[in-house]
Image: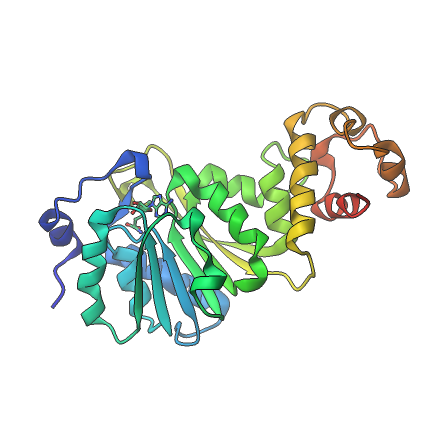
Length: 274
Ligand code: SAM
């Protein structure tokens, strides 16, 4: 029989390491709820058709909830070597094959190291949540769904509509590639240690459009320039791009617009002219 999560944390003396963005979920009611809401939204009853990748399992609360849903396999990628033994203790408790990687998720090649169909699930380390999201969105064709926890203000940026102050580069890339649904908000007391801010869990499901990695890279470049000077008109913020005024005109976009007025599709259309 498995010890409780608190017993596990005490046994291994797992003090949270701030540099690794560690805020642990030690209440199985909460981790079970995250997984149940994700399954319900996807209209599936468990994970038995999916190879799951969990980034940053930590002491394993979310990991236990994932394993209850019988994934085809589970790959955990964890930077903190203190958590690897905890993962090894879970292995005999499950019928799902577990692959335990002690490494940096930013360096982890999911296509090379796991099989499709895949889903990514993570209570993300907040210090690398956006770089990880962008990395996965660039290869979203290889991923069936992602259930990810962010700081609430980051989740709001991801879901922000045009004309909103939170709308920016990450909103454009995420909304161009995925349908995004908020599954729940979590108050700081759900975590150990409690952070200062609320968190939100989002479900990302790839849209059926054919945006490739190169196109996403171009959109990233244009949105970085445009939102880097978000108060400026596009003719100013994008002036380093050759023929920008003609290209905007071709698309019927006024060069006096500001970045937050362009929809994700308009950013894609513009990037396709370069
Ligand atoms: N999943 C656990 C939970 O919900 O209690 C822990 C979540 S904690 C917010 C983030 C986890 O990601 C930590 O265990 C941390 O060590 C790990 N981590 C931080 N940076 C990482 C990286 N670059 N690659 C893989 N894991 C990382």
